[in-house]
Image (cartoon, rainbow, N blue to C red; front, side):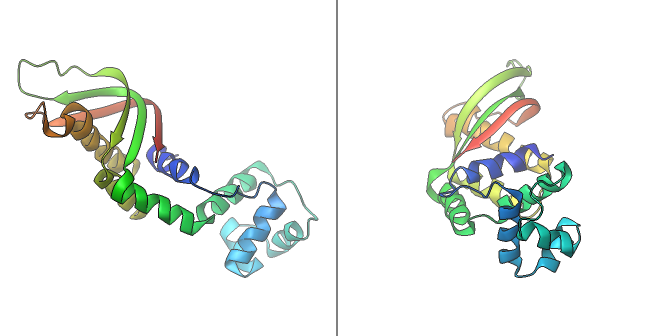
Length: 185
């Protein structure tokens, strides 16, 4: 499970204008329409082509849990691509992204400062350039650790340094033991 990647996806999903198909047959029909073939859908979902055809014709209605999860994930990944692109572009150029987290956060700073890690609950609006970096890294297949480093750097600048108004000597922000993480556009 990718905490940061899933959180970014969930934030973008809030921008959808129509609900994602709920039933398995409707989801299967959507995927067949996208791929233009039952064989391609069957290969992607690792099931037989005949099973896909039976879902499309409403002969099967309830998939087993592992197939239901794969089916929902694949539909959400492809649902309303223009809306998804617009939401990401707006966040990356003008809107920025809001991070709401409860995690152990500390920092490296000069001697004599209180740099002790502690659990903090922060809700911080991050500048658009960090939204762009997070989405670009996600598109390039970045690991959760890489996304976490970008978020930590964003928190350092936006929260701890208040966009250059304080804590100028702050070197590194540590962002660990994440209890809660949510993004919003």
